[in-house]
Image (cartoon, rainbow, N blue to C red; front, side, top):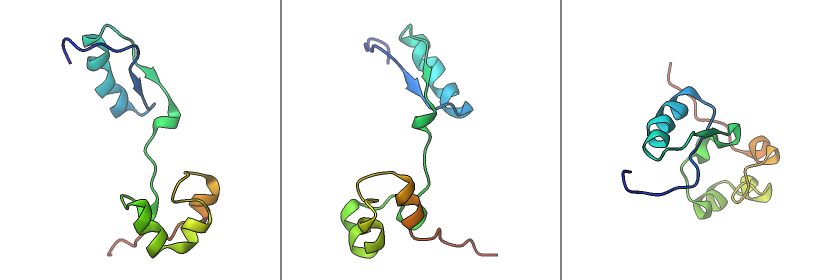
Length: 86
């Protein structure tokens, strides 16, 4: 990132994110700003799916606004997480 310009560096409050942001911030002469809202979220079976695929395969998630919003209603209506083999 040498030679790049930025006004700020943001990272979630998770340690690994801060450890990644610190050398980037140092290179840019910026102190990283931690923000809990930047944490990754898990959405069970719909994790990594395209919005159109979620709407087609999980219509209950689309009705709850899950395909376009990450809300509490979305998490409640999301399909269950896939089970892990024992």
